[in-house]
Length: 349
Image 1 (cartoon, rainbow, N blue to C red):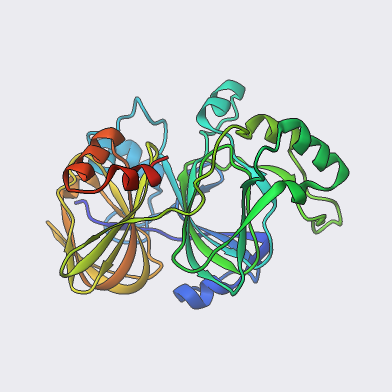
Image 2: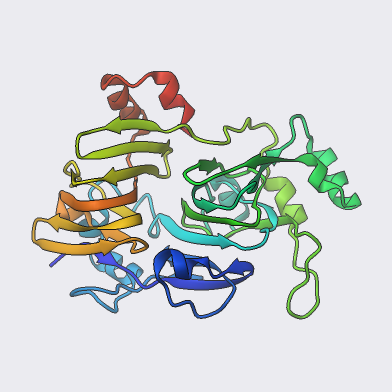
């Protein structure tokens, strides 16, 4: 009855969006300024609809509500999550995004914003020459200094920019000021939240000629001024004969890997949790205990926990996303396999 689930993309037109998703993933886009494609979502602002098999036409929240354990797994308990915990997107930044920050779980609970906090990871799929991100504040910038710079229109002087290129991995902890600049196509893995506080928007106006709304009061409360940023993640590479596995980041909210398969990759049994696969390039057959499914670049797939294990057969590069109940145990297993603790610490958030 259960099988790997595909979904219809949910497109979001944005002032900063473009049309690169059409060429990159063979998509027919509904508009010229598509900034976001929500690939896997169970949020009030966008809900994924299953596009294949027996459950075709059902929404992800409806299916999870009926079959929580079969889909989510024994380790992902209803008591810990009131909804599907992840939101997976593709972003096309044809122009700069606003300078913004997302709240953490503590802020979300304290101010009852109706969302969780929002930790997120960016995987740079493609970047034009000299592409940059804004990531964090300049060293030692205080709350008072940032507030004053916003008032005087000099906030850019307080921000830190970093160059990026294809294949870079950036983890954005909640509370970190950030922005994507123009010319970048990326995959975004995040907590299931759509709460964003803008502090600067490049003096742009909306379709009615009005400045877009800023959230300066909320942003100044949400920013973590004490955090020291990691910036780019240096992945842990685990190479096998038929594939290369890289662990990109480790956090309590999700773990992200990249699997590059040249023949086949067999996932270890995962009875107790679901997985998400986001193919970046190539195609493969997913072999599972009740059948097979072809998957190509840009087709996000949810592997229900009850499938136990699966195999990718073909030439494909995918992001693999899942949740573990204890990241300390996960890190300990890596250390037992000979991975240096310093390397593990570098990608743990």
